[in-house]
Amino acid sequence: MPSTESAFRQDPHLLATIFTPGRLIESLPPPGSWRPVPPVTDRVFWDAIDRTGLVERAARFVGNDWPNLTASLWRDYRRTGNRVHYQDPYFARRDRLAAAVLAACLTDEQPWHDEATDGIWQLLEETSWCIPPHEKYAGGAALPDPANPTLDLFAAETGGLLAWTHSVLGDRLEATVARRLVDQVIARVLVPQRTLDDGIWLGRKQGHVNNWNPWINANVLTCSFLLDRSAPDIRLTVQRVVEGLDVFLRDYPDDGGCDEGASYWWRAGASLAECLEMLRLTTGLDAFGLPVIAEMARYLHRVHIAGDWYVNVGDGTARLDRTNAEPHLAWWFGRRVGDPAVSAHGRAIRGSGAAIATEARLGRGMGRALLALTDREWQDAPDQPAPHVLQSYLPDTELLIARSVAGRTDGLLLSMKGGHNAASHNHNDVGSVLVALDGHPVLVDAGVAEYTAQHFNAHRYEIWTMRSEFHNVPSVDGYEQAPGAAYAAAEVHGELSADRARMSLDLAGAYPAAAGIRSWRRAAELDRGAERITLTDSWELDHDPKGVALHLLSSAEPISHEGGLTIPTPGRSLVLSADPNLDITIEPIELADRRLSWVWGESLWRITLQARPTRTGSWTIAMTAGP
View 1 (tube, rainbow, N blue to C red):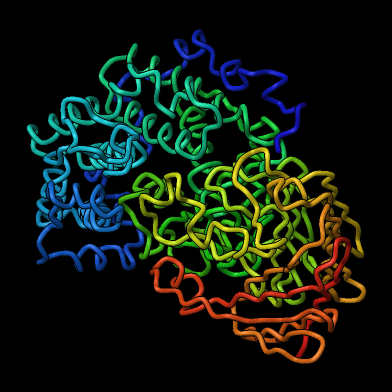
View 2 (cartoon, rainbow, N blue to C red; view 1 turned 180 degrees about the vertical axis):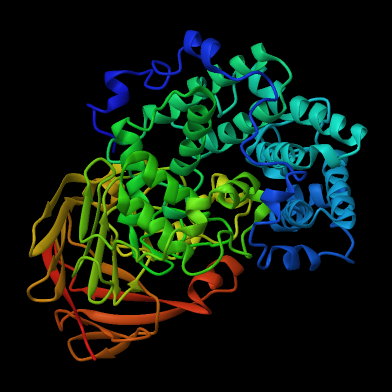
């Protein structure tokens, strides 16, 4: 949880003191003058760009009909709660347009300009640029009203995509198309941002705001700097963006921890960095020196396990989605805050490939892709290994990550979280422990399935991936953790040294009073000398229980044996040694959902260790690497 001495509480207008109205008047560029990416007519620039895979990607769309978005598809969400039916063609349109724009820039061939114009036309004809669940923030209760546009994440992204398209293809676009594009972005994105005070991008009427705030604001700034025709309009937009970002920073922990998980970092801390970078480039005013900004930059590599694997919390996925991540952004973020480890991690994510991965969903990050292509230092940056930091403890976020050896992936990795059960994209997972071996997750958090209406209504915690019984925490008499900020860890302590890393807390407060838990003290420790992780739970109840159990979720099928379990990985196995009096049961969890199966494959396994039901008791689970 954020410390009471946070930078924002010392000054609740952290950015507003840098980007003051007077400084903005003096420093903001005239409308239409900011062009960070050369236009298609600059053939010296574009002919020198490595086009590996990019034109071929666009060519895969050619010959297919543009995806159709119907009123029936829109209504389908209300009827079924399924978001995918509408979202898949919605995003496919945007990815196809972005691919065509890049192909047009790289080749300057008329068929690609025609393809891009077709895509622009498709988007301009859409009644709404938001998606059904976000319409009026009321669950898509009706068909959208084009006279009253909703500015959600994806309407803002659509505006950003069209703004970048206009910026690089403007001289090749027909005048009527270009004019209509500008008019529609202003009407659907910029006017709502400047006139509505209840949007999450401003945060005036919200409590805690999440990634929506910087995600929308980054696209708003793009639209304003590239398309706005009036200097007063640009100033008003920037002032309201700054106000909104200060609301975002108000509750952000000083340790930079992203309570939404590593995958959301790309739209939370990274989107904030985009905002600050645009303001730096346009005004010369630099906010990257603020300590909390540097800590945000460091979060991603601190929670890195190895390769595409990350410590995940909440709805964040354990595996890096390379269609959503733009390594260049992490690389330059590290350079802005002066931390080579952040930059090294960004370069390591890219690997030996081109500056833009061909699998990237360009429609959701057109600006990020274009800026990567224009950064010669990035294109020429040599391969770098990930930093693989030895250990980190984030005291405000209450998160521990520690590995056996710095700079390497072999050996054990331990993570443990505290916190409360009202974090953004929360799971009921206070006290959960994750374990990896040789860079592969073994004791895991499933993450989240494809979003449906249920994920955002009162029945969220009926979904198995949200429940504490499917996280690595205990239950008493079948009672699970409860949702809400009041259900939190207490007496949280983290200790780091050269030979060990340890975190301890009291879990009792995460459970409802009916569970009768007076105290539940949990400690997890990585002992580097012994090459062992130890998980210890001790409890005191106010009654004689019928059952006390520990649940663990594993990425592979465990093998039960006397005294414990062995869980295989692609390399060595993780050996769990436990009290022989614990009864062990193992059940498979079949993963039919495409998002979960993309991360974990066909199955996960739930392990239940049942203790003798006593009012006071304890158990210890030791974990070591086996053959």
